[in-house]
Amino acid sequence: MKIMIFKTRVEHLENVLNEIGNSNLYEYPHVDFVLVKEINGKDYYTAGISNEINPDESFLFRPKARAKSIPIQNLRYEKQEYKKLFKECIEGYVLQQMQKGYKIIYMSIDFHIELWGFIDNYYHSIDIFDDGLIYYMSFCYGIGLTSTFLSHYSCGYFPDFIHDFLGEVTFESSKELVKTMIESNNRMITSLELRNELCYKILDGRTENEESS
Image (cartoon, rainbow, N blue to C red; front, side):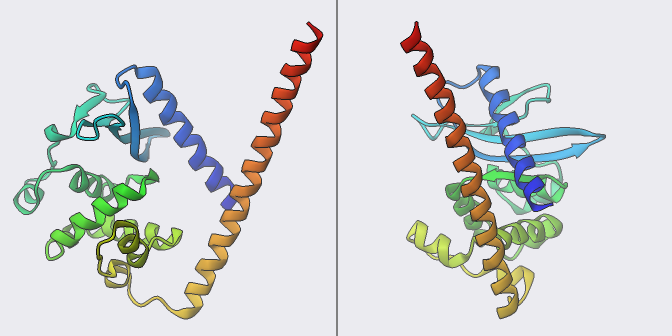
């Protein structure tokens, strides 16, 4: 089951990357995050795209929407109560989408930092995204993304939001998390080794063809 989850996540990411490439909307796209929600058997994606050359140029990409690409400065919350509480920005929009049931396929460390910063800034109002927040903190916990790691990576400081929103993490659950992370890492290494082996075979075949021609 876990292998299928990993494989599905990779397939989702490949689908979105193909959609981005085929759209010809971005010259130097950098993917900040990818969310997905299944509706009536169809996958609906939302991706954050920034420009590798000019990171200030950022867009929301939705391949099945009428307007596929929206500059993030044009994003608007769907509920009036969100507008009263939060600045309209990509971080708040992502929490809104997770509140609606969108799941994370991919999210860069830099965007995690931005999202934790948003939660920190609006800590006393953020629980309006109750379901989305619990899902997101569960996701962070599941992949071992902690306040300690993000604080070290960003050279800043983040409170332990996982503890705040999910409760006390026990020693036994921590051991199980480490075990799961090791197993996931081993599967990823095996997958990469198989892909590399396949690439070598393809390259060897091409070399043989070139030498024989």
